[in-house]
Length: 299
Image 1 (spheres, rainbow, N blue to C red):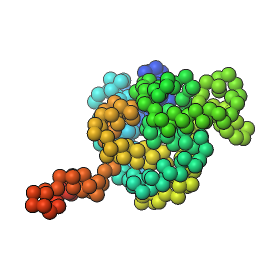
Image 2: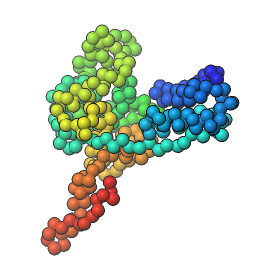
Image 3: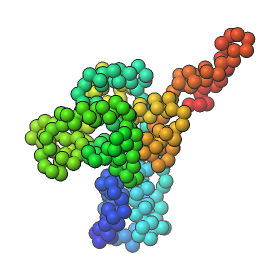
Image 4: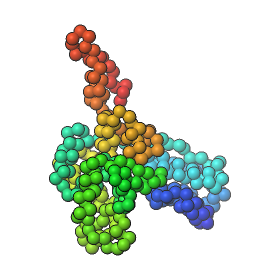
């Protein structure tokens, strides 16, 4: 059993770049086999059904979707196509984006904060970068207004806004002295404590910066949600989709392979629809009579 798992782990680590992806693909099959506790060739569909029932008892739907999918891939890889796990479609958690007023509070406040706060916020808001991508940015990744980054699906690039370029330049003026030659290659370094000048080994500092930005802005979070990087991402994509005539532009900027992925972050609400449809008011009789439309079917 251990040899098969080690061989599969070597396969996963040789075919996928991201450590998080590698861990997910390798860990779920291992946990399944450990729970069943039988040699691979002796596992039956009944064993799988018992494991499925067990997982339903403690996992949420989206966790089950990833767990079953990655485990099914393992069984396919070892040639056990007779063992089947259910395909579960992930659901949207329904978390909202910041509204226009709260978003503007942040955009007004961010200009009063440090270059580090501005740099990290604009990297997330303007270029829709993930914390892990920000963490691993290097100085050489910028070519004028073009920013290269190591995304989920390989090396990609996006366009930097003028305010992001300015924040980048201002941050370099206060950037800590790198501890080593290797640290000097990276853009963002620890700025205080014993790790000052070291490259970030985790995304915690980036998440903390985003929390501080929202705290200083005194924004009212939707439905009691926590101030997270994903909230910034949803807010940015939703706002850009309202202002941009072609969603493919947002898709490319976000680095998504499929447009459907970009649209999952869309939080256009009923009022946004009404505001847009009001542009098509019927003014033939001189009155601004709005068309009667069932807005619910758009939501």
